[in-house]
Image (cartoon, rainbow, N blue to C red; front, side, top):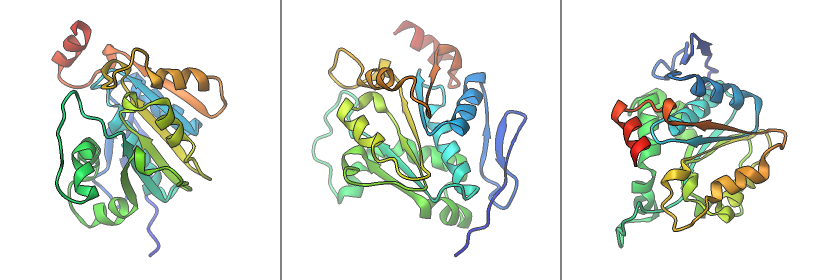
Length: 228
């Protein structure tokens, strides 16, 4: 079925669908968020790196939805490493989708916030064109006409980040998000920052850094980040 192209307004520091998909709305809360959007439009691979609570994942998914609604891309890939935050959950029951679901919940939360949890528009415009998969399942695949998002990349090794980046296909874009200060890997140096350092200066690759001034969660989060 031919999907109707949506018009996404970028006015007064916000993205909003001005057509039938009324749920989609994103307000830029900081200059850094607005900068991230500008760099996304200009580059093929965008790294969003910095403090927790600065809206990195939310922004990345919003940018992807915009591309889908405008028919600029055909698919959204959402990926994360399957890494536990200092705990061992042990054996998880169910099939593979049920096993990885708890690790992917933050991605679903962002989709729900931006698009609503239910409805025909959500199913037709977003759900049918969104795939959620752990990094480990991506080897051997190529994503054409897609927006590919790697979230929590501070929990990826260099090998995993390289695996993700080399899935890039024709007419696709990638966004990699991460906070090196909150890595759950037992490593002295950040593999995410290592990759960024190696790729800096390459045309089509850009990095936007966030500090504690860009945090948009509860004001106490800013104080926690400063002190711990």
